[in-house]
Amino acid sequence: MSQADREVVIHAQQVEKSFGELQVLKGVSLDVHRGEVVVLIGASGSGKTTFIRCMNLLEDIQGGSIRINGKLLGYRERADGKLVKDSEKNIARRRREIGMVFQRFNLFPHMTVLENIIEAPIQVLGNTRQASIDLARQLLARVRLSDKADHYPSQLSGGQQQRVAIARALAMKPKAILFDEPTSALDPETVGEVLQVMKALAEDGMTMVVVTHEMGFAKEVADRVVVLHEGELIEQGPPEQVFGNPHHPRTREFLSRVL
Ligand code: ADP
Ligand code: MG
Image 1 (tube, rainbow, N blue to C red):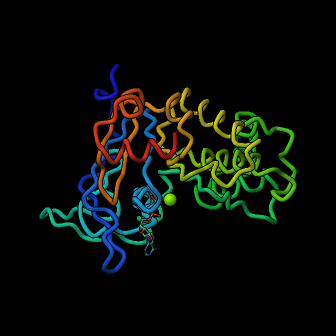
Image 2: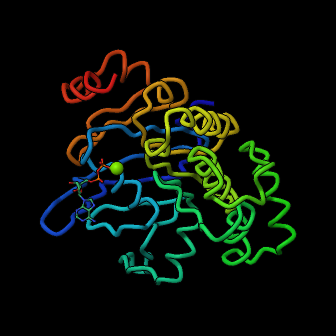
């Protein structure tokens, strides 16, 4: 089955975002299909973080729309077709559909690894403690940290903490996971283990949007590479095309700096 035939999980259409006078996203459209890995690249300040924060309702948008599994995000469609801002409660509920892994791991420092992973499934989804623990142990095995369940974040390396953050995102059974430079705050020797876990997730069919400067990962794992430049999507295609034969001069310029 080609990607185009698959169900669209994230449908961003002409997304516009400004901070005051500064327009950061100038009408960005992107479809992410189920099981697809999209790697988002572009110079610092091009709007990558802002774009994925919009996909998770961490930012509101001034124009365009974002749908997750066909359902509008942040707004409700009234019977007469008009859009009205969704309630905070619904926004909070929808936000859980999409997982997020940040540059900084944001684990709760006073909780063990296991407690970090079961917190949201219990508090937010209302799952039982036992079911949440069972799932957390499965996920810890998946990120190869079964032996760290009772450790505190401060006792782990950066790479281990980031793998816990991935397990914590997975515990919410998200429809997709957004990664914002997940390895750029890590010591070089722990970058590989995080990328390996992400690659395994991709192979298991997780829908992923990944902002990264790890071009090796992009070449190997991405189904599609998308290039942002000054708030516009200037180029996209399979990694071999974008890296091997970039069409846009700004893509060529960016790649000549990072490759
Ligand atoms: P990238 O992730 O590609 O480096 P960002 O999305 O972080 O880019 O930033 C895009 C632009 O938006 C930058 O000019 C940045 O300074 C600006 N920006 C980001 N967040 C805010 C904010 N909360 N308030 C004002 N400006 C912001
Ligand atoms: Mg960023």
